[in-house]
Image 1 (cartoon, rainbow, N blue to C red):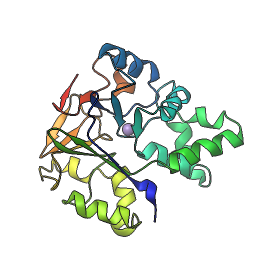
Image 2: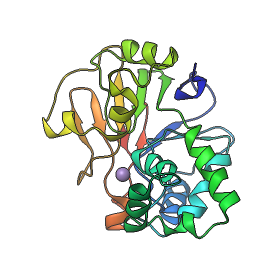
Image 3: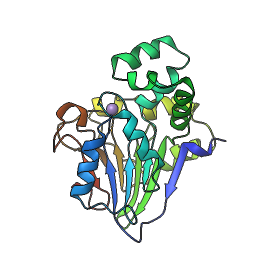
Length: 231
Ligand SMILES: [Mn+2]
């Protein structure tokens, strides 16, 4: 049983909850966004939809967020690529084409530690809010029922139905403009597909607005998890 593949968070009775789109090494930009909303690390929580690293210039610094008690991330396809690059030359080539040299510049021991950190990241998270339960995955929810999907994850069946691969990589629903409501959730928040502004299909919120491309105020989406509005 892989306890790490799913994480559940109770209502935050002290402060606010935010979700952030793919960070992709844009440490300073996220820091700036957190200052702008007066983020309080004692009370507030930040949930990342994955793709913490690669593409942008500060991937190593982004790793430091993973040690913070207020920061919670799932595994994106870029973490998956980093893990696979240890043993698969094709993924190593890919890593080097997508700004992953930061990892290879580290000692073998440090590389192993980082890959271990990525391997331990959950594939899905859920957060209780006053508005209802919010789910977070990187790419998409492969099943229409959140509870059925979580049941499989909890049972350690992330290989069943290629669940792990779909959670991290699939673009099927996005390409199809799929408006299917994910049952059992108030909203599902995802990254992965770059959109110009936040897009909503059914109850799925696409918040990967291309921080690494635009490098500006609108490039990184910080979402208020209760209002489901970018802040
Ligand atoms: Mn991404």
